[in-house]
Image (cartoon, rainbow, N blue to C red; front, side, top):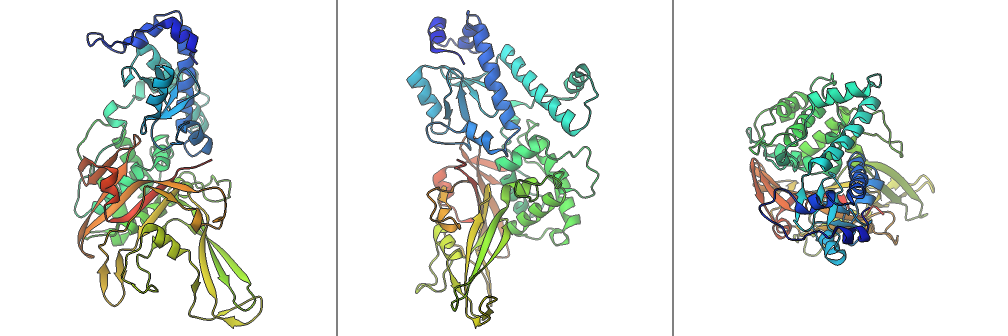
Length: 489
């Protein structure tokens, strides 16, 4: 990294002249005697950033990106070019470090782009961009040689192949901020697709080539359809709503209940997408450390739910562990005096994991007696991404929709609802997506709010995208909530 003494030696002019094209501070740095030190420091930081982007399911990648002040890892962080500090943009800890230390340059931990704290902007420089592009090329070629078995090609042929057939995405496409056209009551589809696009685990898997649609031979492959959407959103400068026609027709052919233009349930469509992306994954044969499926949907959403049956006669506990892909929570507690009161998210989770006395008698395998046993659910292993359905649609003698606001928070501590509830370690999650349903139980409209990599909230109403706020999101009548693990330490 560039040393503080080198910083003093450079003695950069901190004034910015609007007549000078580009960043004068970078130009002066590269024209100084410290040019080679600066280029070496940038090359090291850019290499770290680009390599981390290809390891986004590796917990060590998250740890390197963590803000040294607040622990933030989910939004953009800046690696200081002159010391080991890493700071976030959302809470301005990167800017605070610049103010305290006078260190002027940083590297985006996700892209490898240079950031100048004096200009308060990302900087394009041909020399630095050539370094970054060569790093991208080198890592891409390693992936091609590993996955596509073309290691027999010479390096020169490899370079020519990529130069003639690849291009960097335009600036407008790097955020993936775009809506979907309503193709006839398809709002339920749009909100779930937005939740995938803004899910860091899913997004990074598809952007790094997790599914090879060019070589896929499956019929009606949903992974190919999702891959098309990611390619379009992150390579095209278009800002108009995208019409997912291929995904719509594939969904119709795969799931007959989705065919037609009738209103569908967003949660049911989410479950369909999870199942289909699992079934059409290229990574089914790659088990995780737990011996489970290695597809991206299981890596992101799969946890474990423990069910304990406790016999009152002998206190024997029968334990059953099942996969957990999402949580569906009741919004009322019928046992309370005021059974009509709507619970908060935390109260819903408490009710879900509270002991419940079963009405039917259970034959205990230990003492051999039939008893009215107690059942309790606890989360044995939490997933990286926690998907929660708030059960607003009640179906008993009469179908009804609960239209009240359910209080929820941006940060969620899941520790009390796990089998390790007394652990000193906290299992913290952070909200990144909310899906809402407006209207009646059989007719209505879905919208969603998603948080981008800069920590900003946006509202998606089919093809219309508007800036929102955390306050507006927390005041919404949520139907689906998406949390991602915050503390991976």
